[in-house]
Amino acid sequence: MKNPLSTTYTATLDEQLVRKSLKGDKHALDRLVRLHQPFIYNVAWKMVHDPDDAMDLTQEVLIKVITKLSQFKFKSSFRTWLYRIVMNEFLQTKRRKTELQFTSFEDHSAGIENLPNPDLNREEEIELEELSREMRIRCMSAMLMCLTREQRLIFILGDAFGIDHKIGGEIFEISLANFRVKLHRARKDLYSYMNNKCGLVNTENPCRCPKKTKALKKLGALDEKNMRFNISYKNSIANYVTDNYEEASEAYEAKYLDFFRNHPTREDFDKSIVVQEILKNNDLINYFD
View 1 (cartoon, rainbow, N blue to C red):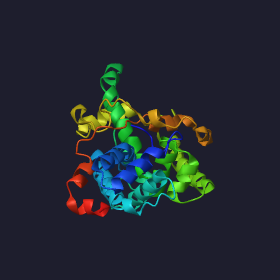
View 2: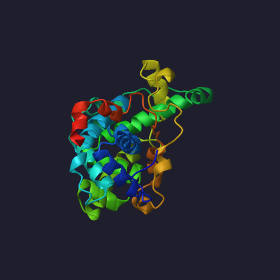
View 3: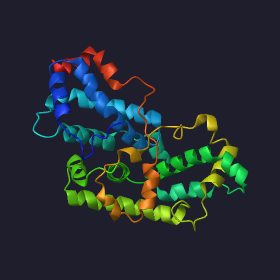
View 4: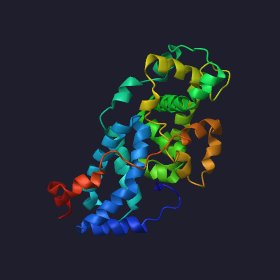
């Protein structure tokens, strides 16, 4: 998966594909969507915490992007134009089930604290290692859901994926300074909670992933056969963090960011990509006539 928001991005290919697409070239449209869909999907996945909801959201926003393609006038970067639409849709879309489930850090904390902390020996800890990673990713993804939508998106883009802050400001239509202020606030809220509750960030905290994993497995809420995040993906977000990410030093603790950047990404999709539906839909194709 290429990170289209990295500092190595070039606009030439996008513009070529857009011009061809607007002339009715379906293969160019297919390639244009294939270039951007994996990144959009992975941001959506972190945004809504559920892979199926992420696919639905990705398809919804890409259909809207494609039907608005004729409105792109080549006066700005296609990347900025595209992701501004995508992020606006992410902010305005209907509330997904996980957003109704995780509404605040207080609720998240109560849910964790209500789980037992069973004893486990080293053999059990080794046996539960992969399931514990699933538990950790789910827990941290749920923490993101406790941020506001805008905070969540800014944190995902600005810290997890490490995009240039100037590009972030362009996408959200705010100044570079304002983007940094909003990112700082999201970091502060998330880090403060993790520092007070999470044993990964602060070893003095009682919460331990293996113990919670054992409890959740006993309750039937975690199962090695039904993992949704830790499914032996080859790549993590860290593979796509931009090389020139000097802003990392602004964070309270770089360590907690590493946990988020080591979350998996997906490049394969269970459903056919959205462009296949569009190419078969004459009503949508009419937007290019």
